[in-house]
Amino acid sequence: MKEAMSKNNDPKVELPFSYLVKILSRYVQEHVTYESLQAKITNTFRKSSNEQMPEWSKKSQEELCKKADSEVIRKLKERIANRGK
Image (cartoon, rainbow, N blue to C red; front, top):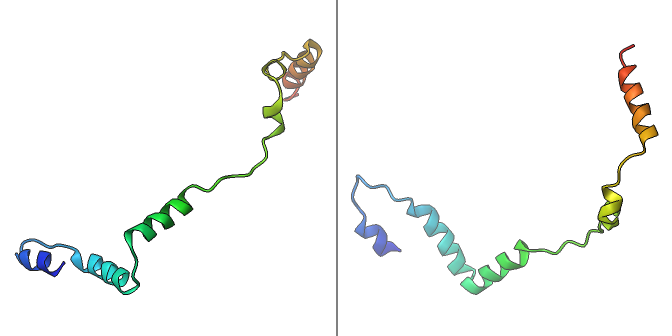
């Protein structure tokens, strides 16, 4: 890492290596390996969800798409028409 920084001592070029150096030096001090980082990422990325399926999803397609009763539709239209009165 220091070699890369020494090769880029051009004052016109600002390379943000200090943050990366701090992270990598901490990993070296804690003996962190690439495999342990990958295991940590993959273990937390995909956790299975054990939620119950909603009741409406258990109904058949015909039951979900059935037409409303004409009497119910008529009453609803009356309520909408008389809403502002």
